Image 1 (tube, rainbow, N blue to C red):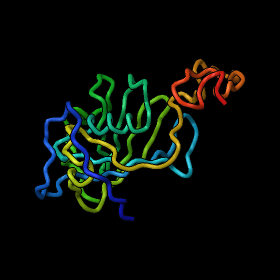
Image 2 (cartoon, rainbow, N blue to C red; image 1 turned 30 degrees about the vertical axis):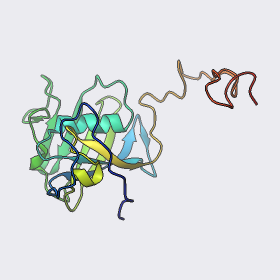
Image 3 (cartoon, one colour; image 1 turned 90 degrees about the horizontal axis):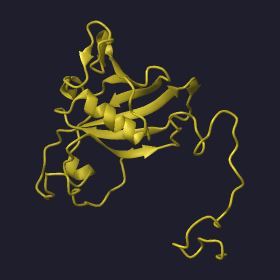
Image 4 (cartoon, rainbow, N blue to C red; image 1 turned 180 degrees about the vertical axis):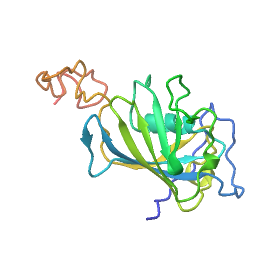
Length: 198
């Protein structure tokens, strides 16, 4: 299904590549990421994101983009990609599987169009995703309006579960949230906010 048109936006200040209207080769990969399971739960419909990435980017770069896109705020965990041919690309760690490839050094240029592989974040909770490389390459200027320095999501759907299953701050076990205060606990920054607003 074709994606809706998006307006061209200026690059963020930390990005170095300027916006321009000249034709750019379709060199980036479009990778569909679907969350399949995690913390013992299987998800259907599967929440998903589509990430644009250059072939020069590493699997570690892609892992970071996926974790940001799926709202992981505690990223002090190992990750692992399982690819066809029994290839494993994982965190550069002393406990990494034998013959695995370090994600910080392995580039996405090894991926073929249409390839499918899995990504697992947190080898304990096992947040596992199905990743599918799109059938054709994309132009980052068409999708983002500029060329990002790192892989970046540009489409998505579905509710993202909390990394630790928490529904509210300080949620532990069978705790329940306090009574809903409505608008009363909010500062009067909008017309309907604040204790005296209706």
